[in-house]
Image (cartoon, rainbow, N blue to C red; front, top):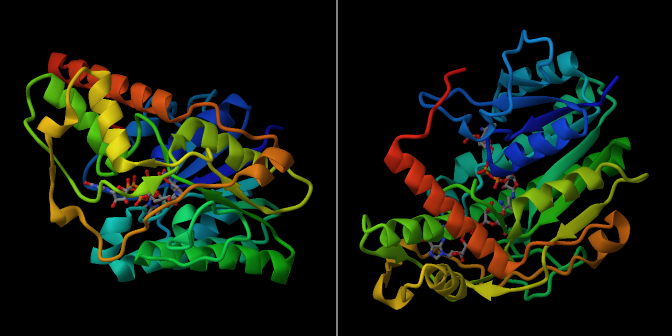
Length: 337
Ligand code: NAP
Ligand code: G4F
């Protein structure tokens, strides 16, 4: 029998890459999707067969991190070997607008999943999607023992979720691992995160259908890696003899300005002619610099990043150029499931 995984946040960037990874390893994958009035499964539409198809190994279930009853029922029914809690209101700027909701879904949602796993008496390993945002204003390089100083409702919620996973490990002996992942990006990144906002705009400006790109703080430093490589670290974190917590990063820091310049430069344009600073995108409190020290992940998991800054920018700009071309030619098809 192959192994069984349950993923919350399966419709997000990481959930889609993790599903592909696990399916390729022979897992049966179950995912939680939220009820939405519009399509929200676009990133995984290529992966699932009809649930009655004899070869189907990816199954989607309606549930929500705000709904503990459905989480417990699903865990009882599915009996997964591995649970990946990736679901979250994951946008830092938006968390200042909806702090209570972010605390509930991103923070309390994690303990709902942990408690549902415990009361359903499922013998499984649990991955919690923790974040470098937890380090907040503590200066880089940041590693597993660096003190947290969260700077947003999102980061506060992630600190709560992180400690909840540690607490369930210590209290109940559950196999709970935190991946403290630094920013990771891809052509599937949500369009209102800064990298994708930039690469989408570069493609549109090059094509002559957008004039300006409005951005906030260009001085922030982030450690940007490539999402498909980061989901491998998630899986590796659950394959160790003992549960532990790991920083996953590239170890390189770049400013938002450097990302902008590299993206425009890739298509032969001067960014300064197009980028306008708009304070609407400033945050009440900013995280100035995140640069991860991933030595523990390298030593314990044998994980290291392969795609670094210049290649990441190139991959994302080129993907958005192709996507724009497909959109303009009407080549994109949405599937109703
Ligand atoms: P993402 O693209 O924003 O995906 C978030 C996922 O959570 C989506 O599937 C979303 O569903 C789901 N979700 C939102 N609210 C939910 C709720 N109430 N109940 C159940 N599911 C809900 O995020 P990502 O970039 O893949 O990141 C995955 C996880 O890693 C998140 O927890 C994020 O906070 C964390 N993280 C990300 C990074 C990064 O750089 N990407 C770094 C560190 C940590 P819909 O599709 O319906 O919205
Ligand atoms: O792309 P961002 O919105 O990502 P942020 O805030 O670093 O959070 C992401 O990474 C975290 C890991 O460290 C995750 F936990 C979290 O879920 C999310 O995936 O912003 C990056 C930087 C910030 O300093 C922001 O102020 O870019 C700056 N920025 C400048 N202009 C902008 C913009 N960010 C956004 N989203 N939009 C702008 O127009």
